[in-house]
Length: 83
Image 1 (cartoon, rainbow, N blue to C red):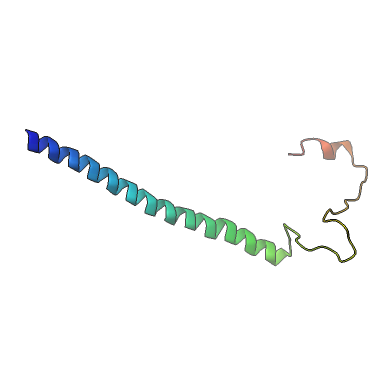
Image 2: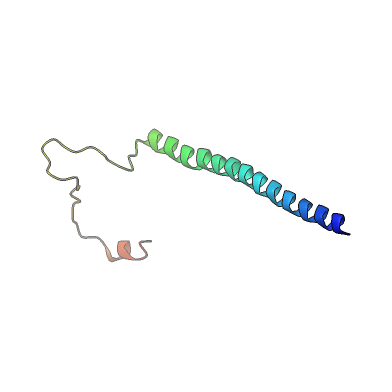
């Protein structure tokens, strides 16, 4: 009875280690897939359209990185459900 119990406990520990290793590989593959297709396709589409999400440059004459946004009056409907 002692050897059978020891064998079963070893099987449980080995199965747990194996599952941990397999989950690491599967997570790496899935996250790589999501990154390549999610971030990669978004980046490619933005480059095709000429969209710049983050402007890192500064004008030589400017003293700040802030961009002046023109202030204008909008219709009340444009403020409704902005998010």
